[in-house]
Length: 106
View 1 (cartoon, rainbow, N blue to C red):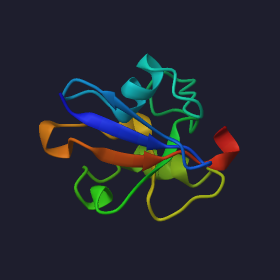
View 2 (view 1 turned 90 degrees about the vertical axis):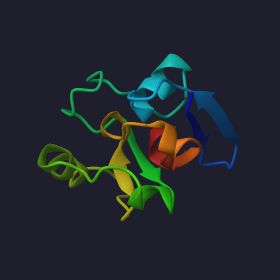
View 3 (view 1 turned 180 degrees about the horizontal axis):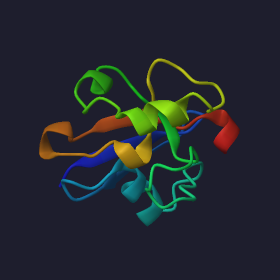
View 4 (view 1 turned 120 degrees about the vertical axis):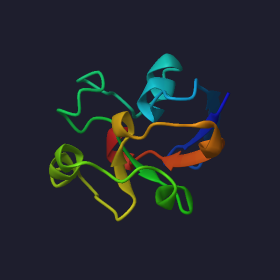
């Protein structure tokens, strides 16, 4: 099972396993990761699962679709690595993907 590593604003890390094909948001919700609210439940209609996909992982995930890019226009503290966790789907090739949680969401 692939793993996702969440880095909190204070530097604390937590690692969780998920099934290939699940999203980073799924791992966060299933494990009550602080800072990933996902109020729309993965519908790509809010930005409460905003995260930063750390290099080099960002280049390895599927690029954002138009809906995600539009929502990212409205997030606080947007960075070039900003993504919506509900739109980052993990495969076995992405085992160990690292995402940071924005400080404004904690």
